[in-house]
Length: 137
Image (tube, rainbow, N blue to C red; front, side):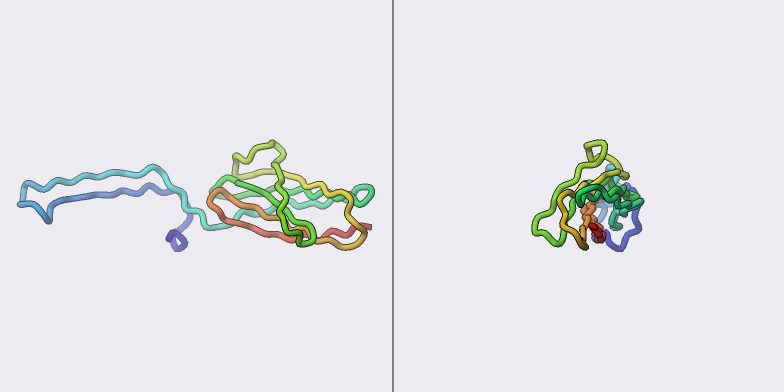
């Protein structure tokens, strides 16, 4: 319903009146303003992505998940299209802000090319997918 509204923080004012059902001078009106609501239709971004090669096929992916309007809710990843997403905790151990640094350390990868798919979700349910190619030597 809010896909066409510009993103931002809004308050909604509702005014109710019983004027159509009452004689002149007896009508009543009431107005109420809502608590702030957030309209956020843009998925988060993955920024500053770095891939570091280690020993014995170990690879570490470092990045920051950022969103302009909503806190980051989760970061998950798949290796080579596995069926189950693995959860990643942010470096400060709690998802509570619009910018969350994290790292993924992968061990025991076989030699060759691998694809790691990272999924970042914000607090409004917007999702960003990014596929990263790793070459293990």
